[in-house]
Image 1 (cartoon, rainbow, N blue to C red):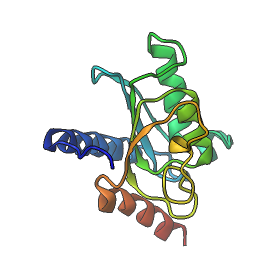
Image 2: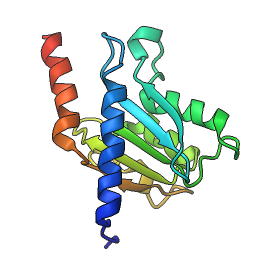
Image 3: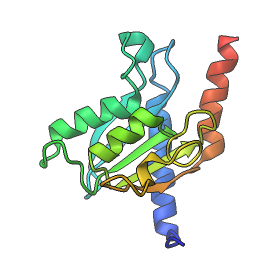
Image 4: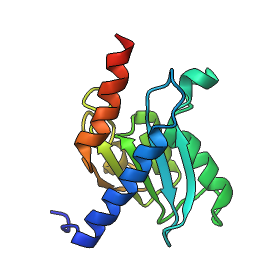
Length: 159
């Protein structure tokens, strides 16, 4: 069993997810509203990004991937984002979860669970699989109702 989060950590996670929600609200209109923010170990923001798959006609242009690329350029350890925290409004997919492992991200905090494609506990658990060389600490479901509402609103407009 894992260690229970402290009230201070819970409040910090909620504050950071609220920021990711604000980032998600800047997503281009045709893209699924997902916001990602990467924090350095000392709490500095290294990157923010939204989904841009439709806008950029790029299947890899998920918010997490774009943020990882930006953070890797800014962080002093090259491509390794050791001890950094990725905060995202939606549980990462398999591609993004694999990128988190490859980048050696220390911690993942996400809002809504993704029951069809989630790869951090819902459908798969890529980031904590015993076979991976680096395991990511995961906290999911932070401000789940607010983050899920972003998705619900978007898909209601698509109908």
